[in-house]
Amino acid sequence: MEFFLFLLFLTFFGLVTAVLVYYVKILFFSKKTNYRREELTEIRGDVFRICLDVLESGGNLVYGVGAFFGSALLVWLWSLLGSVLGEKGPGPFEHIFHMPIFFLALFFSFPFLKEAYRGEKYLALAKPTLSGLALGNLSAGAVHYGLDRDLFFLFYLLLLLLQIPVLVFLWNREPIYGMSFEENDSSYSYESEDDWGAPSAASGSVQENGWEEEDEGPFTEETDEFGLGDDPFRDDFK
Image 1 (tube, rainbow, N blue to C red):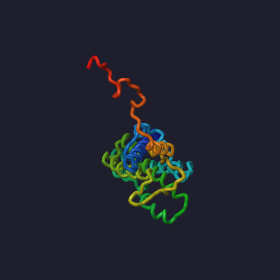
Image 2: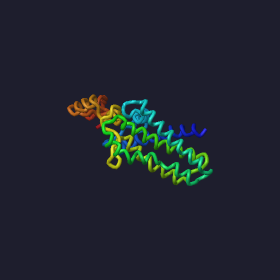
Image 3: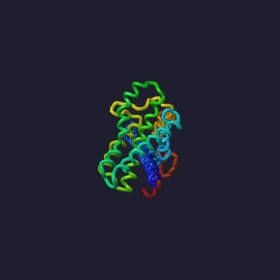
Image 4: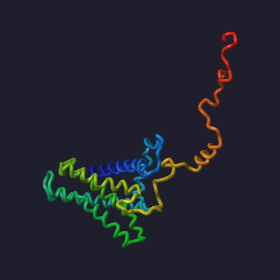
């Protein structure tokens, strides 16, 4: 039962984070000022591609999925030790084993790992691994807080505020404290010109030709026999 809830919360937090990543991208990280209605409402395809981009880091979906779920299960098993050693209800062991220790360790040690293993393909697994550690920690905390109230609400809120913003920057390929976890020339990217409403080649050519033609209003082709050049009243009524 608890493991099923853990997987349910893992999926939930993954989708919620992907939605936040999408809206933060178009509202803050992009240079657009005008948005189509479809860009703000029809986001299911983009959310799916954002999640796939995380799992396909490094160009290998199998390794990415393994790193993501392996790190998430590691955090889940680690959190169970707090329930074994502690008692029911909020206690020191529960809070210690729910602290994002693995997440913080990988986050702050990545610059040294990147320098030591420069050019290695395994560094691309840092993104799904870090994501699995963060979402696994939040999912495990949600299960323990919801079922047994083993965590204080403010402590769990601190976990959310600490890890979700990092994932938003990470999934958007934005530097975090001047540190980049992914190379810009990634083989797969959910970002494309059509996604964010950038002008394509076809629309660009139409726009260029549009400057040469006179703008047409909505009543251009309408024939009105009472136009400015016609007088509807005969001379007898004047």
